[in-house]
Amino acid sequence: MGGAPWGYKTSDATMASPEQWADHYPTCAGSRQSPIDITTTTSGSVAARSLAFSGECDSYSLTQSDESFKASVNGGSCMASSNGASYSMAQFHLHAPSEH
Image 1 (cartoon, helix red, strand yellow):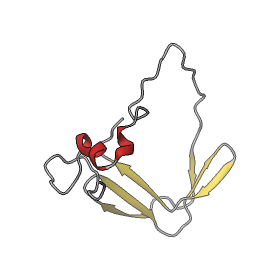
Image 2 (cartoon, one colour):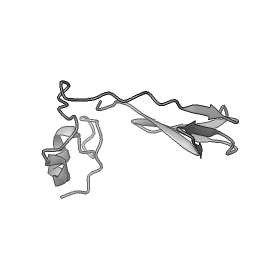
Image 3 (tube, rainbow, N blue to C red):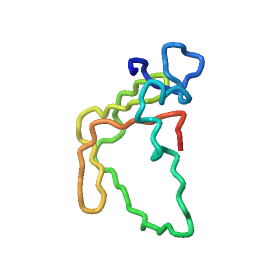
Image 4 (cartoon, rainbow, N blue to C red):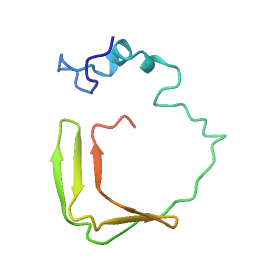
């Protein structure tokens, strides 16, 4: 099948809503899908990792689609650092609604 874009809107006939995803995309019908069942009695804990920002991180262009916001960082001087590695931030995305 395929073809129909997937999304969360049940009122949009051009979009495959969550209950239709497996009809359009067979891999969505698998047994290893989200949300997953985590057995908390056997799960471990992970130490929190810090995330630090530096440079000019307050200048960005924000665009909105139906289910997400995209912030493109202007100027290229915003850096994100964690665990000794640094990354030049180009953009970040916020999605809503969330599955999790």
